[in-house]
Image 1 (tube, rainbow, N blue to C red):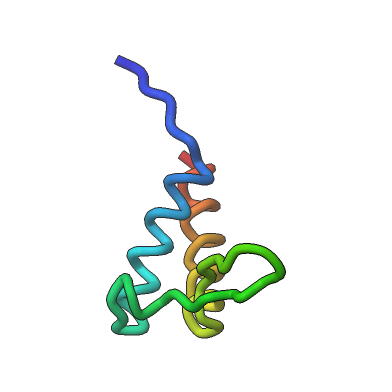
Image 2 (cartoon, rainbow, N blue to C red):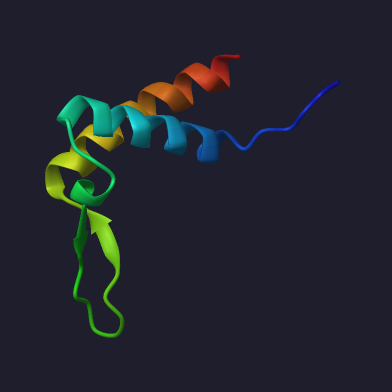
Length: 66
């Protein structure tokens, strides 16, 4: 049976989990409030974003090769 996967979503989920492990943070610890114009939105803290970006690129490339 063939299944379709969303590469962006899979790479994001894998990178998110790997980032938390690498920086030693819980789910609640990786988010900060943006405080933008309208509604406050949650974004990654700077360190978490940097690590996520590295792992996202890695996982996306690996999945795409398959």
